Amino acid sequence: MKFVATVTALTSLTLALSPAQASDTPSPAVPPKLIVAISVDQFSADLFAEYRQYFQGGLKRLSQGIVFPSGYQGHAATETCPGHSTILTGDRPARTGIIANHWYDLSAKRADKLVYCAEDENEPGTDSDHYVLSPAHLRVPTLGDRMKAADPAARVVSVSGKDRAALMMGGRHTDQMWWWGGKGFTTLKGRPTDPTVDKVNAVVAARLATAQPAAALPPICEARNYPVRAGEQTVGTGRFARDSGDHKAFRASPELDASTLALAAALREKMKLGEGAHTDLLAIGASATDYVGHSYGTQGSEMCAQLMSLDHDLGDFFTKLDNAGIDYVVVLTADHGGQDLPERNDLNAAPTAARINTNLNAKVLGQAIGTKLGFSGQLLYSDGANGDYYVDPGLGRPQRAAVIAEAIGMLQNHPQVAAVFSHDSLAAMALPSGSPDTWSLAERARASFDAQRSGDFVVLLKPRVTPIPVPKRGYVATHGSPWDYDRRVPILFWRKGLQGFEQPLPVETIDIMPTLAAMIGLELHPNDVDGRCLDLDVGEKDICPHIPAP
Image 1 (cartoon, rainbow, N blue to C red):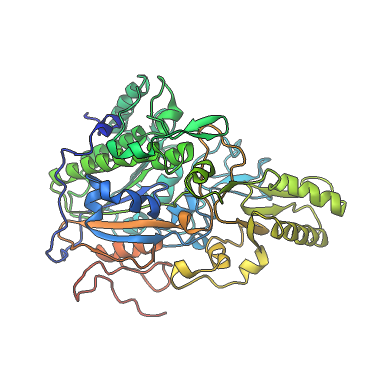
Image 2: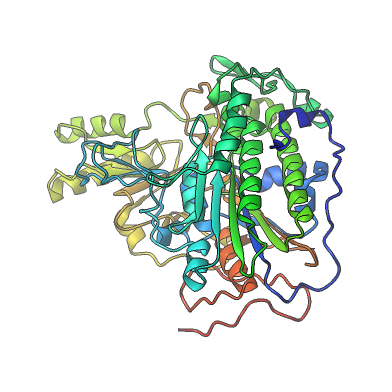
């Protein structure tokens, strides 16, 4: 089986591709036979704008379709699991129940109270490091779930570099679901293997067993080719060289996306997705951009090379679909954006960026409060310095109230904290509406709030504060803030015959699902989803059905 182009493709920017162009003819009246929904993890609107002029492959094709350059993940918890939960459900995290990658359930029966968003913590013998993957926490159906309910003959396949992306985009009723498991692609517990996946895994294993030399750097990336010191390591000049068997280096390189797209193409061909009488769905999570962003930052030569390779590999993938003669529609977006590492920001005229103070964490804060109030034991729990904080449920109501009040007061006075919102204040708020670029910090936090899973209070850091106190290998930069560099993502639609246009006004990722539903004639009822249908027809015809008010 021919492997999709990988890092070696970085040597050329003039690709041997002739991507189809968006046609001037009206949008086809019939539903597409295949929906291809792609999430490029950590592909911010800023990165799309920065590199758009250089794309020559698949991303160029999408850039000539229908472009929303200012799409929004409207919520504050801009992490992988919440972001992916919005894309094919049409709902914000407040409705999907996916408030973060991890949250605490201090009433859980198991000793480890930290819960992973894509696990079933009720499985015996599990903890937050050893879990059984499941979509059980997702409270709403995905597009694929709705398609299967309306037409059981529809096929739904979800493939990703990350398990949580595959589960949140695929949902509960996929025909095939695969994600990168560290040494190969794997699936849910109890599901059978597949010969096609075995073949792809064999190719990937052979690649992993072979050391990879440094790749050639595309010419446009040379301007970003300079060293930046981050803690005890240097980034900015990496070329994705790796030793034999180095799975972590493989993951944080274009090789991961190439492998994911190869598997997606192979399963599409094997299952003949898009070739039957029904509309099928292929969800793809391209995860390498996120791993590259965490490992090297967003503004170095590594990110430049990663995006040029992804552009090429997507072009090859679309060409395979073209050659199969399939009528397909593509939507591409991201689960969140990302911020560059503060050390490079400091070199590049933004000295206001900083790393978080080491004293801003739940244990340190809880100890200070315990000393002041005379309480013992661990008072506060949090998976990081920002986001949800939980108070020891063993305290009495007056003691809990005192701890919460003291913690909020201390945090509000911290120079790196923008805002703190209590559970009660968020629960009393209405869900946000209107344009997401105008939402207050409280409204952004409310969009991520779930009364059962969210913390006793939520902490939001000030702009450009990186919640990584000490950089280390694979983790020098991150996302997760309520600020637009993490919230803004591109939303791109393409279909042959669909006239392209650009709309710079904000829309949300929750608008993707109802738009695709309208395109295939899938009925939605009032209040089914948070999102709205986007009229992708530039003429007087409206592709969006009229949904009467409840």
